[in-house]
Length: 473
Image (cartoon, rainbow, N blue to C red; front, side, top):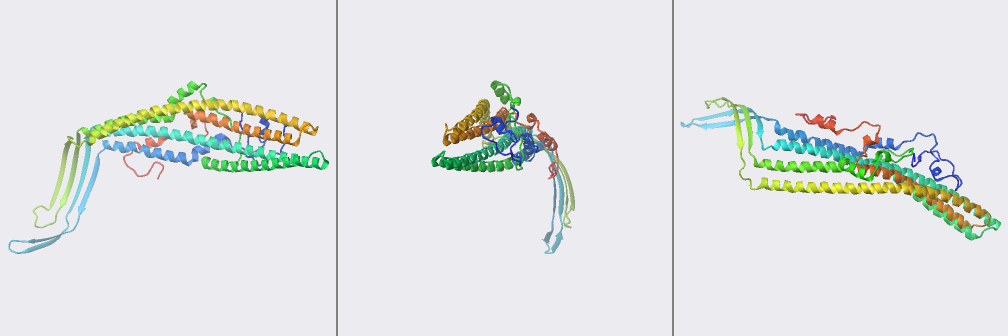
């Protein structure tokens, strides 16, 4: 099929046709030829990619994670501290001959200290590795959120289209039921039917109005969800098609692709790397640490009783610290890191199993929607033919009004199932693409600039100073 659900949000509406004329596909072809500029699913996904707050929040979180790397790299860089002290000092000295000396002094000291760590048990190197693995894991988390947001957008888009089509179907049903009711009243006046027939027709009109109201409520809710996810109220929506062409051809190939490409699995793999490196990070507290410190200072004293009024100092000091016993803290942290590493491996296996289950479920559901759609199309065609026959037989006196009403209801129900099957067909294909791990801007070939987390990472990785973010905040 080309477009699974045709354009459903144009303002211009065609007049209802007599039931039983045309095919199931024609039910959604009413608006396909209307000359209105429609928004496609691709356009909606582009807007979602650019403006969705959940996705933008996740990007901001990832930019914050990027800062872990320059923070870890500070362990390789020298630390400079400048100090300045100044003040007022009142001095009152009593000499041996009971002579009193007093003065108001203004001493001050200025100094500069540079500290460079030479060796800290590989703590800095492991800190950098942990930070880089966290960045990679965060990128996969961002991809996973992107997939979820895209799937939400597809679902919102298709729900608006489906609910609009259901609203159309129910409105047409009410119009037809009113025609039947009017015809039944004329036949009652002519003595061809009984009051029971008119009561049955009136009952079905009331039921149709209730169904129409429910469809209108569902449409309003789906429009609001669309606005929340995509960022703009739906206007004119064009037909949407499944994305089977982007999905591996077999279930086995889909599972294999998911194992190698799904962001949840890749992210869990990087979490294992983080946990393993954290063991070495904990063990670094058991190793010696070597640092060198250089300092220069000047101290000025204006006390006339002192022999030294000004003192300049410079020093270079090496310091070696060898841990002997810290109360068992480092040992406990090392054991803890090993347990966390074991946990992360089990989580990875769990994520793999969950992903496999999701792929199999999505694959079966996608195949099932194909069968359901074909059956729904056949049902609508048969219901249309049946309604035509019942109406002709009713005109010949071989069918009652309730037979016509039941046949009309069967057609309306069949059309509603077809609408749901068309919606489910598209959503199921995107769900399978997401389960495989390929529901992203590149695979969908969206016409939008790509947000690359690498750009911000390289902008901040080797930054030695600066309070502003690359975006100017």
